[in-house]
Image (tube, rainbow, N blue to C red; front, side, top):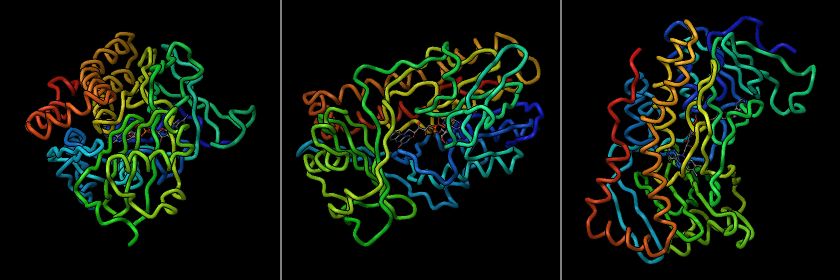
Length: 397
Ligand SMILES: Cc1cc2nc3c(=O)[nH]c(=O)nc-3n(C[C@H](O)[C@H](O)[C@H](O)COP(=O)(O)OP(=O)(O)OC[C@H]3O[C@@H](n4cnc5c(N)ncnc54)[C@H](O)[C@@H]3O)c2cc1C
């Protein structure tokens, strides 16, 4: 089997979500020889609320990719409506857009390929060795018996960028990169319901509907193609109690006085996807000739809808270090990535985690919704601080 040539790539990038594709695009634009790998074939389904916030949009603008939102007809977002039982509160969220991940991720890959990156879909990758001399990645066609002898190929890169997301296992052979999962972590799940006349007209474009409940939360948004995206973070125990994912989600909506987006049978029969436990942290996000970016670094919870921004910002910020590493490896580059990433997202992830935890408690949930409905300016200030661009987000060469 030969999936790729035996040349040594400047960069092998594992994972073609927003983080991997944007890193591939920038490195390719700098004239580097980039191999971008993903186990999926695109467009692929992805559990996501599909809301691209202002910070993410700023990265797209800086990368000359803003046209993606325009060409796709991404839906401008105006309001986030929070529901908890009979209570609800509205927060203005200017500058965000709803866009399906099918469209967005494929468009980013296309841009990376147009910049000169080589993209190989349907290929699962694992880093098998990385040291000061080079980095080696095992690849195999996804779906074949896991990395069986003879079905596998090794590609070499001057560096490897790991952007394999929340559920990735590309670093499993290097135990120093292990992840730890929070004890009370929720898991993600969701579905996209294709446009049809059966979608309840209660749900309007330009609004994010967020139903909060003791067992988790459910976000709904109308996409550019008039489909409705449903993305949730739920407690496993709550889903077990309700016996199925659709019935747990339906329960959260019913408790918040929200209608099912489509008739019950269609809702239950939709194709639901799940993720691993959400709240996790990786012990190390860099090593000799390895940089980890995006969700693969760790993830808090999706409540504040910032994951795409963090993924894009980390891709943008790793590029100067990656270029330096391709020219000449120095162990200080690994240390610097750990520091840069910390400054870029750690504080914001902590804020996001605190907000998510505060909404777990019914009393503080009630307090937050009351406060927002009386002083909406408070919520606006929090939302603005989450999408604020930190001064040192972009590292100069
Ligand atoms: C319920 C939920 C709702 C969310 N809502 C929002 C939202 O509204 N707005 C927002 O900004 N963020 C949201 N997020 C977060 C967002 O989806 C992620 O933060 C974002 O996708 C991270 O991008 P990434 O490139 O790091 O990883 P991903 O987008 O996960 O991409 C990783 C890629 O790596 C590939 N891969 C994995 N392992 C391998 C391997 N071994 N070999 C090859 N390829 C591999 C996968 O196929 C995948 O394509 C949400 C998340 C959840 C769970």
